[in-house]
Image (cartoon, rainbow, N blue to C red):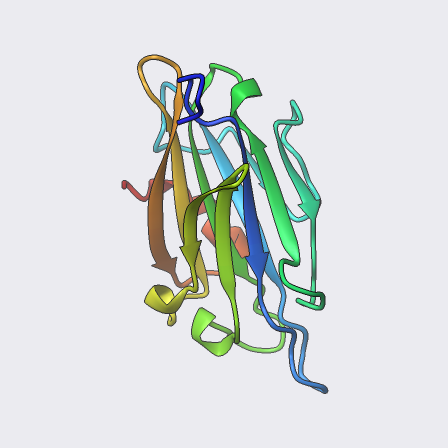
Length: 176
């Protein structure tokens, strides 16, 4: 909770992974966020943000994207501005999906992969995907709006065996 007592404000999801070895197909991961309406928090998402897309109101955006993992440290970043998110939404689920070009890949096939969820300088989550090593996609976090309207964070590390499109359709069905 922020110092002003209103729950979460601006949160970043930061993703890193090592690039493929020379001659191998590129390792491509994506951060994905699905937003659910207050009246149906486990149904179909109202909208999904991924790759270089953004939410219709600009409150969830990709501010850094990599298709290879090349770079120093964090190579992909999504920003979620909960203090501006419409009161029509009551749940946001965030996950990571591995593109399956060049053959099946799981988190266990990656080296130095990790995700960090922060609000300002405060770390909410750090994970290396070891618990979902056999998965091709994983949810990592669930954000829910409480009765007072404040947004709360909950770790939600769950593995899936699906491609990015399939993952986006099923990731919100997970109950924390």
